[in-house]
Each structure stands twice: as structure tokens, then as C-alpha cells.
Length: 330
Image 1 (tube, rainbow, N blue to C red):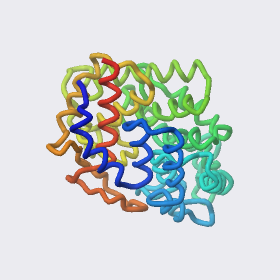
Image 2: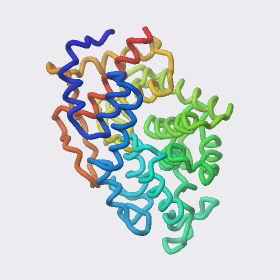
Image 3: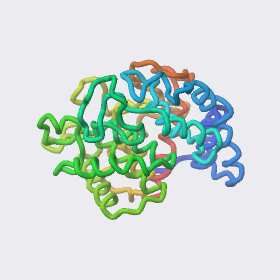
Image 4: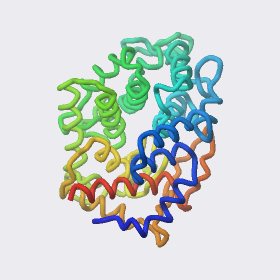
């Protein structure tokens, strides 16, 4: 499967005529721009557009929306995840300042170090020490590793490694007796393990755990049930379909997110990915773009000029670089 550079040229320009958070990734991943030009474009994430808007919303207490986590998409955890997706340079003054405030001031109200709930008035764990659910801890640890806050996160690492299920994945419902993993939880943890390694973490236990998690996805061809082989129409919550691509994904899994993880991990393409790749390719519209098929309901801290059913720069960027990676490996 090859990408036609001539066909994609107008699409690439459409992507470049965008927010710095998209532009610099297009330059790095699709146009092979010189490193100094990529770095200059990336630096603008902190000072222009969506990245700058998100940074400006941080409160004096170091948090966003006054909370470590909430049921919307505008809490401290969600904003750090989004800034990581946007590629805010962890070494920038703006990132160091913002993350330092989170490290020093934001806490998981109510949660003690041993995972005991002690009431909302209890001044609980520091933010980067996490809480109890592997889905949430995975998202926290991914940001922790990316922004260089691993010291406080050793607790999360030990928890996640101990919570991996026999089938290779993870599930937030394991504490309630579930013995089968969840795509949603597994992708959150896998991204965290990978972020740790990309940031320089060197642990044979982490690498082995991550590879077992990858096999969980690959054995299911990224969106099939292992037991029956049928396509998974919706996750167990009934709130999202694995075959409909969203951005931001938050804690939800979909096929494009799974493939993006495998691309970033440098996984060698194999036949277990082929159907998922065909699904991505099938969704390219007549203009060479991909739609935002699913927008998870919730309060966004900033609007990113994308709406459900319309062409999405984020999904187009992600789909094109997945196809480029897969094509290069076959």
C-alpha cells in the first residue's frame, strides 16, 4: 500500500496551513523538513494557537478546572494529555513552568498513598503519583514520563506492572473481578509504557510488559474478538465504536489510535495489522482527507475548529503517517 505524494500534496498544504501543534508534526513526519525548521515550528506550540491557549488557562493553584481529574475533558490530567499530543516541548520554559506548578501544587484529593479513600477533604497524593485506576494512572504516567516527572511516578509504574492480566492487557474492572482485558484501559497503559521508554527509561520488565500488551492488540487484529473473530462494534460501555476515529481520544480506544501506538513503538508491520490498515485507507475521502467521525461528549478547554462529520486535520495527519509507516515496512 503506497501513498501517492502527488495526490497528497494539496492535503499536506491544508495540514500545514494550521495550528503549530499540527504543522510541526506534519513537517517532521510527512515532509521530512530540516530539523532546525521542525524545532522552530514546534517552539510555537507554547506561544501561539491551541497550545498557548491551554497554557493560559492554568490556575494559580497549578491546576486546570480546579481538579486533578474530572468527568469532562478540561481537568489537569486531560490538558497535560492534550499538550503531550500537541507536542509541547518539555524543555521549553513554558512547559517547565506549567508542569512545575502541577508537580508542586496539584493533588488527588482524598486518595492516600496506599489507594485508600480518606474523604474529599484529605490532602491526597501529588498529581504525578497518580490514583488507583490503571486507565487514569496510564494517562497520568504518560504525561509524567513525557514531561520528565518520573520520580514521583514510580508508584504508578509498580502498580501498572502488577496489574497486567494473564491475557496481556489491563482492565479498570479487574478489581471488581474482571479477568479479561479492556482495549480502552490497555491502550492507555501501553502509551504510558512507551512514553517511559521514549523518554530514556530502561527496564527489561517494562519492555516485556509492553510487548505482551502489544500482542493483546495484535492477536485481536486491533478490533476483533479473540473468542469469535467478530468485529467489535462498540466497547463494553456502548459509548464508542472502535471503527470510528476520534480526536482527542481521551481514555477511548479506536483502530487509528491502536495503529498510531504501534507506529510510534516501531513495531514491524505484519499481517495481523492488514485489515486495520485497510479500514484506515477505506476512510480517505475523495479529497484525500479523513473525517472526525466521533467526538466524545464533554467540556473541551479550547475549541480546535473540528466538528464531527467534517474533515479533521488531526485524523488526517495521524492516518497519513500510519499509512506511510506501514507502506515503508512492507
